[in-house]
Every structure is written in C-alpha cells, then in structure tokens.
Length: 173
Image (cartoon, rainbow, N blue to C red; front, side, top):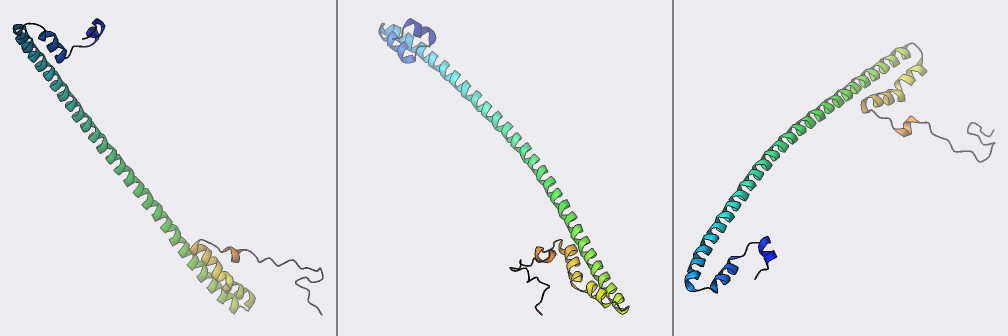
C-alpha cells in the first residue's frame, strides 16, 4: 500500500486499484474492473498520443536535419568550386611566369651568341669568349629553370695554407 504522501505525488497502478477492490464484494469488483478497463483505455490512448507526437517530432527533426545537410553540401560545393577556380588561376599565372622565363632565356642566349660573334669578328676574342662561355649557359638557366646551383653560384674557397710561404700564387723557383 501507499502512504498518503506517496499517493499525492504519484498515481496508483492498476494492480493497486484491483487489490483494493478485491477486498469488497463481487458486485463491487465487477464495477471496479469496468472502471479499471476504462482507466487502462485512457492510459493507452494517452500513450498512443504521446508516441504519435514523438514520431511527429522525429520526422520534423529528420526533415530539418536533411535540409541542413543539403545546405551544408551546397555550401561545400560552392567552396570547392571557388577553391578549384583559385587553384586554376594560380596554375595559369605560374605557367605564364615560366613561359616568360623561357622566352627571356632564349632571347638572352640568342643575344649573347650574336654578340659573341659580332665581338669576335671585331678582334676581341676574350670578350667573345666571355659572352659564349659559361655565362651563355648560366644566365639562361637562371631564367628558364628559375634556380641557380649553389655550387656554381659561389666561388670555391681554397684551403688555408699550412705555411705562410706556400701561398696559392707562389711557385717555387
């Protein structure tokens, strides 16, 4: 049985109602069972209504979630298209830069070769050698490949002589 405080805070179950009515005569029990059946039908109707309401809420949540997913997918698609367009623009600019370097390298090499021939015909072979020598290879490489090798770009360092009389320019006589 329930205490009066518990009775106010919660509703009695169908079993508790049936046990209370079981102590009465059979005519009262029939009336109690009819009332119990009506109470159970009302409970069932309330539970069904609550389940239908929960199902409707779930459908609404699913619909709003699918709408949010569709919006997110559209946003990702737009972002990806913008990213692809930016990458294509960057690749096009890089291509133009490399093509400009190739043209500049060709013009520089051709100009140095022509200059070498012209200067060589004017009896300045040392200047023609400079124009047609290593600089003919090194300068176009800088323009075409956009790099310079560190080994060829800086002068070689000679080792420090062990004795002061053995300098690189000194030769024993």
